Image 1 (spheres, rainbow, N blue to C red):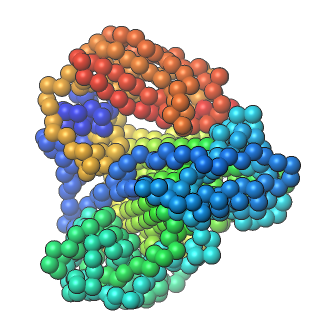
Image 2 (cartoon, one colour):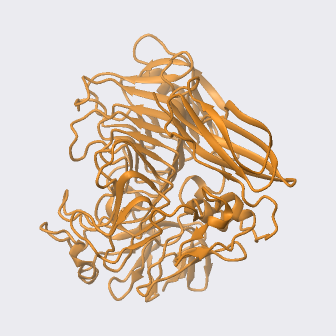
Image 3 (cartoon, rainbow, N blue to C red):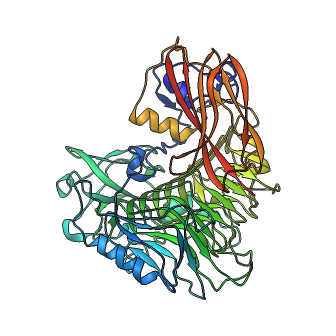
Length: 620
């Protein structure tokens, strides 16, 4: 049975609109809105429920990405530009930060910059910005890497520090505490400890749940098929958090647990995190990275185009990377990172293990990948850091012609959300996998726990979703095939709902959760803006002519525009009064450079404004 949506107010309008009118909206049985605009989560008999993913991304998604003023400008020279760009980055890094913690941006002029070494943003508050990420050096800033250097082209963080399990390094100077609760539920942010006096508000801490023999037995040794089971103490579950409040013995942290902690299986502790080498408030924007190679199977070039290493509150926006052999964007040992409107295209390598992970989270937590595009990947979007990975959100991304699944890749990654994901290109049997990888790789086993595919469009490919012991995985509102099976298991009891039923509400789980957490809005049943909808552009990606549909329940004023990743309007599709019903507007992509754009609708109906967007990819 499907629920009829009770969300009739502004929250429903901004976040819960479906591709059809309001009467066709349906809600999941296990996460839905109440009459006051709040989200309700249903917990199953094992204590499993869908996590709140809204804490992912820069500043927990609570503010826009910053606009940092330019303080240094660099133009290309003959030969290698690495030294002059690095000198500018270091000069900005030596400046005093402003009240917001920013030192300034290094802006690269339009042109081609040869970068034979690695550009490192090693100080807080430094941004590297270009003129654009297109392929024309007259209007974009293109970093060209030549030769057999496998180091990244750009590294955000301190390279010497961002190794191993740096995200969970321990500071032993102030002691630790035992967590007293018998169960710390998934989604919980508060728990009791035996020594609260050892902690203070603002402390960075690590919740540490060791891999005991009892816990490993509960998860079937990891479900590794013919490979060796996971080893005791080899893979602790860890959550990196900041203390927000202390009330007696109860500590409240800044983001929820992404799995259930059971004291009977593994007593958990809380310790102070060593964050001495963490770099904050760094970003890169509007650049193109072109790694030259000897051909599509070459592997002597840069392993990764861009690496984030041991950073927090960091971002990449409007950056395109080509011809890496491992990852275009790899987020390592980091927290609160946003990768938005970026492209990782045409990796060059043999199509084999460890290759072509275009967007990767590795030993990182609370990371948001939004509005990105991957082509010719094996695993287009993947978390790859075992139990150190959690709270990773893939929001409204596109994967084109992948040869394997986007997925939780190995060893109990937790809280992975594919939200509004779109598959493009020739169908493949499995293009999203949330479950068991058995003896793939090195005892990958149960690779994903408490992971969700929400309102994904599969283009003839499948979502495979399986239930791990002690946990759950979910596929809700899949447009395509959703099956409780993978390469090793089937019929495990995974939660699958609403396959091939359009109109899932909310359309975006992440956006609804963020709205409910940061700006809850009570329902207004008679809101005149009810029934406004912006359909996805068609086709998408588009090469040449297409169209966009707008639907109004009542007549109203419509402004429909296309904007680039910097928010600049590049096309106006409509600016007029529109009658009630569905209206179609022509889209001409010929004048637009290949890349990712946003179709933006601003409508006024009955005197009330309404805004929404849809992603658009232009290809050639």
